[in-house]
Amino acid sequence: MTPDDALPAGLPGAVREALLAPLVDHHCHGVRRDDLPRARFEALITEAGSPPPPGTTHFDTPLGAAIRRWCAPVLDLDPHAPPAVYLARRTELGAEEVNRRLLRDAGIAAFLVDTGLGGPELLQPAEMGRLAEAAAAEIVRLEQVEQQVAGDEPTAVGYIDRLAETLAGRAARAAGLKSIMAYRHGLGFDPARPSRGAVIAAANRRLADPKERLTDPVLLRHLLWAGVDAARERGLPIQFHCGYGDPDLDLHRADPSLMTGFLRALQPVGVPVVLLHCYPYHRQAAYLAAVFPHVYVDVGLALTYTAAGSAAVLGELLELVPFHKQLFSSDCYGVAETCHLGALYYRRGLARALASRIGEGEWSAADSARVAHMIGTGNARRLYRI
Ligand SMILES: [Zn+2]
Image (cartoon, rainbow, N blue to C red; front, side, top):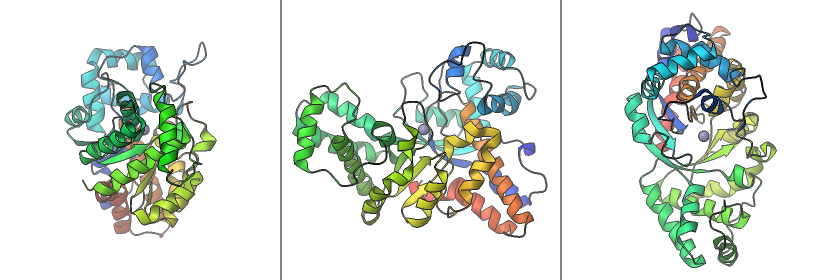
């Protein structure tokens, strides 16, 4: 569990209790089940997608320092253990024990796992749940479903029908859907549902080379609206990757305010939208959540990667976001450290924001505890109906 010294001293008991209560992690990925040599571990603690320059290490980052500070004690080491000592201890304990300790100590009640990334080396949702003693459910990634359908269906009409059927089938067993439109096109897309004629023409081009990643803007919009249909049928939200991510992304095209037209078009449909990560556009995201009734927001990944600086990011989100519109996620991926630290920095940042509001006489302790409960679990349970 998040250790006592991670939270400011002097917090009222009810606030401390609300902050330490088990969280719903509404956006995460599987962690690796195998033991990781140093180079592979370092590749998983950065979004860089490449090794560090010769003579340097990805441990010399906010996240790397945070691993040494907060994860080392979970593996029975002193805080600030050097990287080599940390990694040697990791190998000594073995991946399963390391995963069990870091996931369980994160204090998570339920994981909603985006299964659209990686292969058999990543733990499945049920395995994540078992190790962490938590519940688990799946979030279905639209682009992954499309890739599979494009490989299976040789005709445009068959592709359109099978896409709708497969999305409906997957949605029936999932807690939500997810779009990575930000990666494939950017969020400044035409919000209108494309015509059937345009979709058939684009599908014919697509099926000539179905192994390629989908980047055609007409088919991406068709996929998104097909996802909206499946989500509406099941009462599910759709998550969108926004902001910070790996170098596949053009960051300036991942600003969620670029999809304002789509959010407007979706409002009467009744499908909630969840803006994930958002950094450095989290203020734009907070604005969107404040003005659109169906928009929710979370800074997930940004907290893990800004680590010691994350309280400022959370503080900026809290400037404007309605408390019933914010969610917690760790966005853990690859190594369980990212789950552990996502939860820790969320609690630590929110604790600091609440302590300052209480100290300045802005909020009561009871309201602060209520807000911590809403953001940590209540909003996610209401939105995903878990
Ligand atoms: Zn993610």
